[in-house]
Image 1 (cartoon, helix red, strand yellow):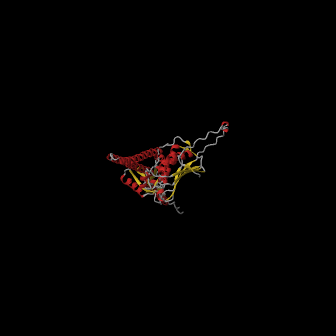
Image 2 (tube, helix red, strand yellow; image 1 turned 90 degrees about the vertical axis):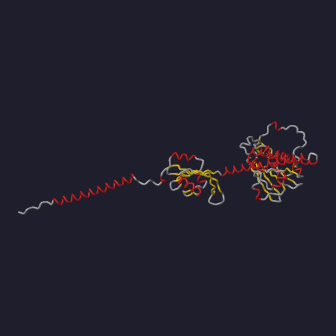
Image 3 (cartoon, rainbow, N blue to C red; image 1 turned 180 degrees about the vertical axis):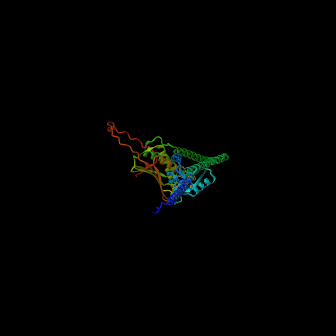
Amino acid sequence: MGVGREPYCGDVEGVSGLLGGLIGLLVGVVATLAFRISDLVQHRVPEPQEAQELDDGLVRALAVLPSAAVVLDGEDRVVRASPAAHALGLVRDGHLVHAAVRERVAEVRRDGVIVDSELDLPRGPVGQGTMLLQVRVAQATPHHLLVLAEDVTAARKLETMRRDFVVNISHELKTPVGALSLLAETVQDAADDPEAVRRFSARMRAEADRLAQLVQEIIELSRLQTAGALDAMHLVDVDAVLAEAADRAHTTAQARHVTIDVGGETGATVFGDRNLLVTAVRNLLDNAVAYSPEATHVGVGVRVVGEIVEIAVVDSGVGIAPAEQDRIFERFYRVDQARSRQTGGTGLGLSIVKHVAADHGGEVTVWSQPGRGSTFTLRLPKADVPAVAPTPEAADPGPAPRPRTPSGPRARRSAP
């Protein structure tokens, strides 16, 4: 009887041990990886700064700022830009456009202090236009910079105009005052010469009149530049405005043997200030008379074109070069300085006309050619007056009134 073979238990135990070792190794590797991942999570690299959201308070503050606002991340990429920043051309393709602004940003990153400066920058990628911006760069958050920009071009231009205005006024006032002082000394020295006294006294009177005119025009111009200069608007008869303006200009025209012809359509009306309109038309007439040859005609006429009333003053004088026409409405600007001194002009008349036209919702234009004269046209909105049905009393006008002797300007009314 053979002896039976018993199972080999050692093989089973060896396989089990091998599997246990493999499982233990796998568990160790997984544990190691888990610890490494945990370590990486705890010490992970920060996210890119552009992915970091801005504080809600900062976003709300930027939304109400009147200035153009740009927020930059750590790599100077634009995170947020206001519509004003795009309108000024500060931002394009997610970056700041102007090198001067980028330099201010680099300065803040380097020194950590707020930078505030005025920069003269191109207004666009083409052309010669420029803009003056007040730029302020500061650290907004630990990861963001804030760039604020305000367009101060108009403010600086207005400041320059005011400064020039004061300088010009000082110069213009100094001239007649100095002349009066010298003439007074001359009259005093020539007290025993009646003829010399009369001659210098006449010159003193002319300088005094010029000084009074200059002061009056400065007052009128200051009033026109004040907000609400036309608080009370009334229905104004354009025919009456032309008649009064021609009457006031008659003395100056008569001295130069210039005839003022009043013509055009009748019955036009506008809303506005009668006195200011008379001043504007009178200034145009005085200007036309001063620059017209003696013994010539100056015309002023009315034409209604649609909803616009046009008051045109025409002369056959020396004319104005095209290069000068854009500047003749500036304060104290004179095309011919010597002739203006001779005629006694102040350089404010056309500027007053421009402001009167603007305050009445209109404009003043000029057509001129050297040697062929000039035409200045004051264009104003026609008064929209609703028609009123006649009352029974108005239907019966009664007896005709007695004719009166015509009165008004000493200027003839010509046909249109």
